[in-house]
Length: 150
Image (cartoon, rainbow, N blue to C red):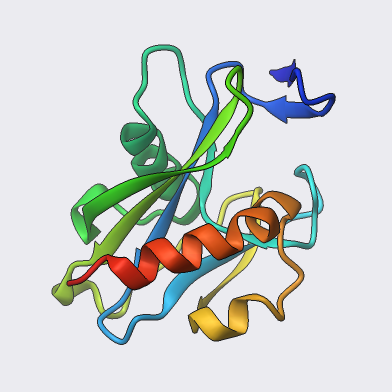
């Protein structure tokens, strides 16, 4: 369900949205290439989506990575959450998680929302065709990832 936000834009999810930023042991992050069937198709973002009523951003992000990529909750350890876009009546939360060591070769099962996945270096992210929300939040996200230690 779309929400008309006070910022003048439409956002998906009446309760906000969240995405899971998964880091591997080398510091690469898992990114998803959005399919032609979703908002801002052909862009790169993190697995994520709308929060359901009463659902926390962490629970939503973990649910979404399982739905979109088939990656179970047991494959990651949540480290921290940071607020990205925040318009008071709608907000996007990034949930930072570390890949559990025994999941180094994460098998993914793409659903209709995602065309491909890639492990990306932080420095390379800016060169990708990013979802506009991720692009806007990139400086804060980079800062947060630099502060979060393993």
